[in-house]
Length: 208
Image (cartoon, rainbow, N blue to C red; front, side):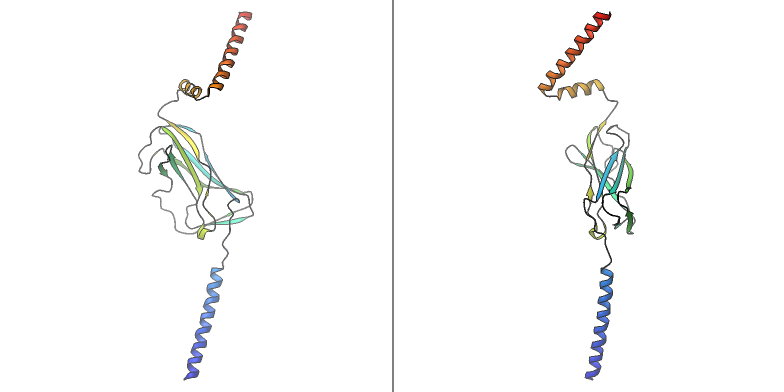
């Protein structure tokens, strides 16, 4: 009886050892370790001034400054961007209410290679589809976090855009820009303008 118990115990121990080896081999599968400074995220837009109704084209790409590597993402989403107003309030997020494939996505990127992750447009609306009002807005874009934290979320600097309700009034903008100049710069600007006026008047007298 004791011998049977011992055999069963040894058999169970062998099965456990085999299972541990199998689990260890699975968990030891290599997951790429991406340093923050290896991957650079670049967010670009087509211009900085828009009229209401004009879409803002947003492009997010990455460049690999490190060795050849593979990026693993938990879903089909690779990047994202959001919009905030001057007060820092949330306006819009590209991934809001979007369904992504839940399959692991793998991207291989060589050293010095650039790959586009996202290319889409913001139609100057809130998350609920209502249009925004004229003003200044900020666009922030990033590459999403990797599978099992294999790489962090990596952001680019925010971009500022201005939205107008109609054609820009260049004279108004010029006046507003002049008012923003400090007094010393105003004096210099006045001196330059006066000098140019004097030169123009003098040339007119000579050749008139």
